[in-house]
Length: 83
Image (tube, rainbow, N blue to C red; front, top):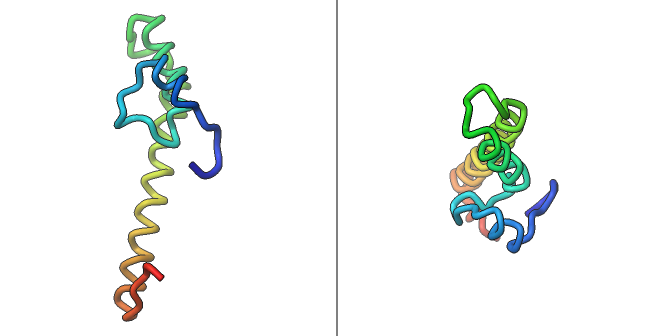
């Protein structure tokens, strides 16, 4: 995991995060889920935490898209992209 805060496997297990959500944005999901639990999942609560988590997810998505476009560009140039 490059950059950002890293949440340990023990912390993610204690927070009961599903494996699919244990990514580079997990450090934001742990407090979001705690806030949701504490406020009985009221939609108008935890807006700041939710926005931060969703923005992190969007930034990670944009990085994956850029990487895929880069790989496609190198493949179109006749280079393998893996070396």
